[in-house]
Length: 247
Image 1 (cartoon, helix red, strand yellow):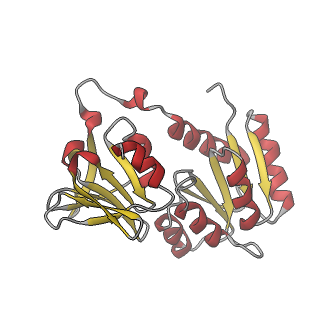
Image 2 (cartoon, one colour):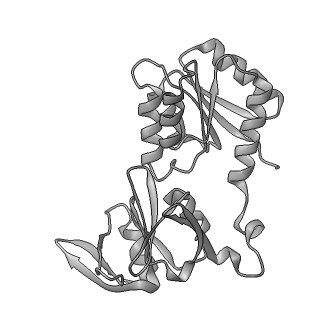
Image 3 (cartoon, helix red, strand yellow):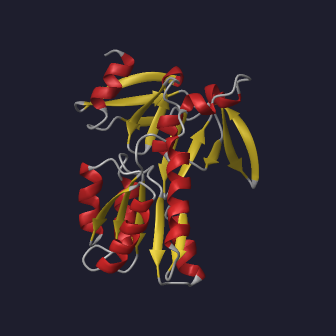
């Protein structure tokens, strides 16, 4: 990788931040520090961050609140997060993973191991679509889960993608499947497909649009599933949506 990995460390213990900073910089990474979740969110808004290392117990905005902000913002939802904490209970780990944390590291920890974890996550995130596309068309299928079984769903069969309660779903004409990716990750994955983000919680397959309505100054998309689901286009996404559909 030619560009350095940008890492944000959010921890109110300055000695921890400095220790991580020193170790990661020895591996040619750029490290930004923040003393609480609020400062961390500000850094994420101004810097291009590849991986976040996030402590749980902090004043003002703690790790859980910061994680919620990160995952609920389309611009940061796809950034890998390593939760760093003295909490060793299984409940804390389970909650962290359910909230979208990629890895959970307990204190005390090895900076060398932490560096390896960061590098692995950053490399996975920076893989380009051209590096993952296969010639046999497998890239045009999406791994989904339903009833404990995993299947490959053809991209063209997807009517829309939605996110709710920290989970992502792919909807076909009459079925719904669980997808182990965020909408932001899917937006990157499907960049060359005919999908458009209509709302922070919805992506629409333009080939499956049945009707576009104008209601109270906003656009509403009727998709071609069995229920003719109506998807509102958010104000933030209106310009990109209009450009995508040519209106």
